[in-house]
Length: 166
Length: 166
DNA sequence: CGCTTCTTTCAGAAACTTGTGAAGTTAAGG
DNA sequence: CCTTAACTTCACAAGTTTCTGAAAGAAGCG
Image (cartoon, each protein chain N blue to C red):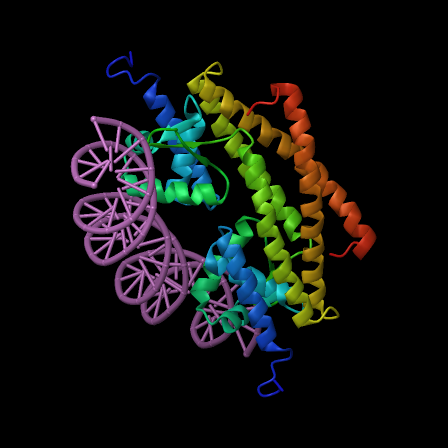
């Protein structure tokens, strides 16, 4: 039934997933366009798309794609590839994307911890507020250590189940 | 030297911490006012403040406090108390606030997983895109299980170190 | 070495978010 | 009961964010 203007796959199903998942990422605090680009890549056949393809699927200008990709590259959620002998760039998701993202999250945690440490110092470790903040700090330190181990275990778990993909 | 207009504690140090930590929460995707209210409570002496106190410290209207608190209560980061025999309400952070927040995060994860599952179905589990999404789904399912255990271990760890506070 | 194709940057318009003041609602206390 | 203190809701204004079109900047290819 969806054979009119067939684009290679069920374009409508892809789009529905992309927009739905992107919306949830946005709700969790991610920039809208970055979320849409990321979701589109995730759902793509090869895991990589060109700027033009992304623009076409998401109905946005090249400028918007450029901005989104810059952000995603910064937080290591996509990598850029240049096909040798072409000005065309491809943007790719890795299957260990989430690992990377979580690793990066680590850096955020570190900054939080620093702020909390300063808070404890300036309120005084003996004050009730200072103690409360110290406990929060302890939680984040614990979390940080555990997350590292958790990701290690995930890699093993995944390798068994999926074989080590890219 | 900061004894002029002493408010009970070093108001400036408190404010500096509150605004700094709130800014980082905002960066991580939290609503600005909710972040400021939460940080203020965290740094407070008793861990609880009235609407009026919050308004005074943060220099905002009662309406703004009301909105922020509604959100924070929804995501279980503060609880409301009514002092018996008073129309005044107090908002409190618990020291297991982050536990609660993470538990709630769980609900978010569940929604993500549902979306991913639908994505796998509609793209087809045999397609490359479908497989990629399935792996992401597997990651989140793994993460969800591990987070539960992690929080359990944290509680033990904390009880040893801090004694079980409220 | 210039042409062409692709990407990036930038200023501005549109859309959305967020906080305010004012009016409305609830409930304590006389 | 009526008064009054406290919280909530709502419409709107101010401030941000976000996307676009246009122009400028790289880099292959003839």
